[in-house]
Length: 218
Length: 291
Image 1 (tube, helix red, strand yellow):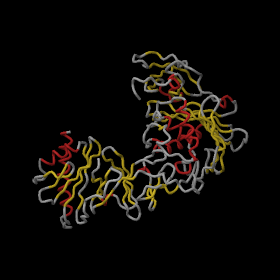
Image 2: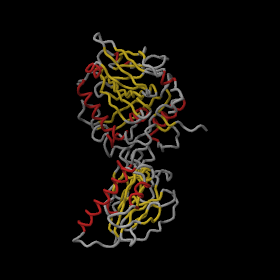
Image 3: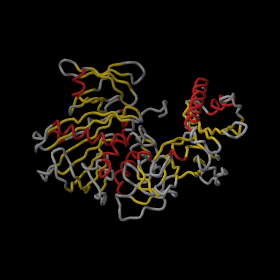
Image 4: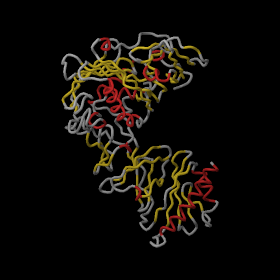
């Protein structure tokens, strides 16, 4: 499916961090190099199929836990095979890389290999709320949110994006599998530091209710 | 596996380990599964073992069950050959024991391939069977075995702690023999006797296509060896492999050479996969697409 999906808040994957997620049933390893480049790869070493989320970030490379093969941030190209340390790995040996972009608050992934860069503009003033996992399909989550959220009416952006009418609050639905969804949400604009915690708790409670309702309906 | 497709004779009509005897002795009765068939094993007071199962849908006594090498063996079909032979276990001075049986959520073929694998020793078993910077795998020889299977010789790896008896590292010579699709034997140079080798066999019980129970059989020349240490060491090592094995995707072993990239160090694995294809093993594998 050639479209972009939010898969994580940017600050949930700091430099050196290796994280797991799934998009439309495709397992992904999300990892950020020491220099700050975020990568979304197929979660599978091309050598013997071990999940790369078991591996670790070493500078600008991700190292597989099984045979310590290293793959370069950005290209996915294999850079080092310890069982043949003197040889340069063939250019055909690479992790499968998916197109990724960050808009300042969220990371977006497209599972189409040659997808054009995302249309999402940088929006560095946005605040990411806590992403919440629901055992319910996207359609069920959307149905619940469209019935209203914390006294606001919610409008349909598209199949996977919804927002309140003044655009202050946006929801991005990540289809994990056909039966699972991660609800990402962000507030437009900067938050007053004094109110930050109260606002987070408020949305946390509302999102949890939405999750419970979607799971009950699913 | 397609339910309507019968399981290939090379597996169905062969003997497989289904229990470690010392474990069955503790409980007297145990449930297990072989090639998707649920089984109940019972140990009688006289030491005889019997089994019931439902290979054709109805529960019946299983005619082909026996104890050998400290393991219970069972054949679901009509035995086409005897239980795989381990001649070293008949050398009277060797210490022979099983090493414990561990359920692993992966195809037994993946477990066998991992046992054959040299390149992971310095990382997954760091401090025991390998360590950095000794990561290079020098060329070794792989050839077919006349009776079926493959033989890998001239394998050599630096090991800081090659066995529970050693506290000093040295370059260890390895020989591997894959004797059956789910059975692989490792011979390691013995530090005392140059002309004899330690024997460690991995026998994978194919529970389903994506689950196995790894049984271990060992036969060591009698130098500073005790059974408890051998079992402890094997379980330590296998405990390091298990999380790797359970994170392989797919859980079945891909036989198409294009599915996973192999390098020269993977020669034994590449030969193993080709041999499985040649003898028609599908259970626990992702067969290569028909050309």
